[in-house]
Length: 300
Image (cartoon, rainbow, N blue to C red; front, side):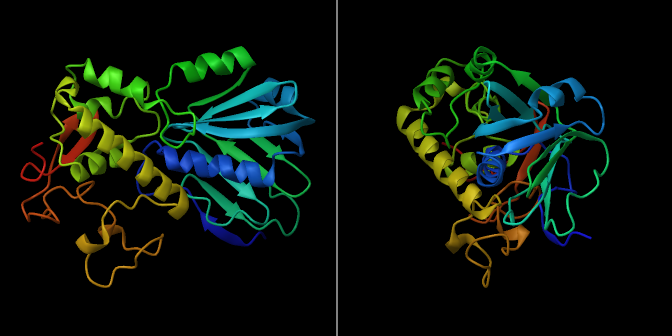
């Protein structure tokens, strides 16, 4: 039996993985699959034609853009994957410890493991296997199709080619609440519900504030903090947004060892005391998702 070395499936709740997770998955493909001929199959059968196209091709490149991952195979042909609420990757093979949420890693001691569950796509090399289950999107694209898909996405703060001015133009012209705009993937790609709440708290910005009322200095600081927190997420494999001085005594400084109740300021802390002012954290529905904020601290 393969020895379990890491778990990236979030079984506590079903939320779309945020941008740092998808970048970690792209890094895993870069490390273990890029440069290798890949055998592709669809154990579930729902992606049989696509798998037949990919079978025997070399994987040349892996990249993330927000919550979506793009794998480029020789040809060229692109595989676009969006995990959505229920998708995950399950990896087998050495060297993939601690990838992050939304998959499972195991040492490949006795050959590739049997597919578990409804596996949409299996990608295999001589040393590694990656099984994709339950994605919202799994499709093949040409170069033009890939360009069209990414053109609909806002700048990804983790990408070196990100253009924050595009996001600022949308925000500066909008009457929509900044708390809604940050969740729009055509505004900023990769921010989900937790980062939305934490970024606005750290900036002390009132989440109902119309985007057009945000000042340029506020936006510039928000973008810098977004990049920093997402980079920390890639490094740590977890969303940790609290500053050391605001954590309970004895909390580990970084990494997954940190107590979950010490990682955030307001996200999932409805009714609990704000770490800064002590007043209860509030929550309400905004655009179909739960918004968390402190009405005392967030007035800017």
